[in-house]
Length: 287
Image (cartoon, rainbow, N blue to C red; front, side):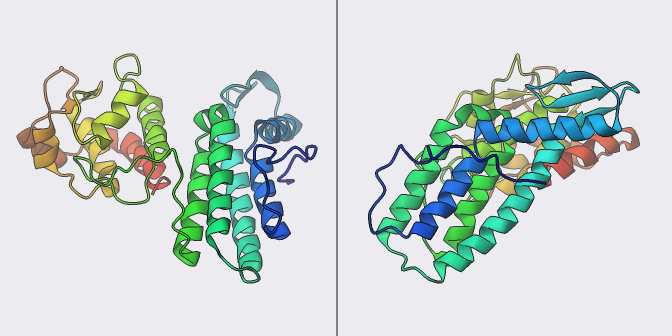
């Protein structure tokens, strides 16, 4: 399957390219920008719909959410296909990074160029990244790969420092991760988006001080299981800090206390296991 929908030579016009910047490095990041682009995403979605229509009788297409409904009632998600494309693209990009970086000198100019390019992608494709958060994960993975393997210490401008927050978010997790976490909670009917906005959800989990709360719409067993699922993202996150924070409310509107948290953490109902396992699987993909 083709990765790229090749457009005209309009990439990185936002920047003045340094004359002494390695041409292969520029080509590499042009490729990343071409991939993380609404035009390319449209191309991939059309390809997904075309491939699905060859095997199924389609009766409804939601292009905004990327959902195809077939005559037999089955649904096919573009996001599933997109995740495979992004994963394959990331594997290829890592190989390209290694082959280029072995030949060039890593200077402050290199670091600045990469930071500016990734920031530009985030700014210019904001709507795309909100609709399909898997692109956020791709940018995050590229940044982390460069930092871990080549010690570039890349920091993107839109990334707040959450490590000193109340629950002490572990290093390396950006706002985009919590945006995806919010989507998972909404999609699984754990919280009501009319009562809990994305901003309030993120603030409740990441702010040092806040009056924002997350009110759950499910029974306490599922509430606590969801909170346990997201525990690996924090350093200072347990029944005590959760209760003391007063940031989480039960479906009855009362504050979730340390006592109740610890009690329901030990309870498990067989009928809830399917939804809990599904949430665990989705959350693990964000780690």
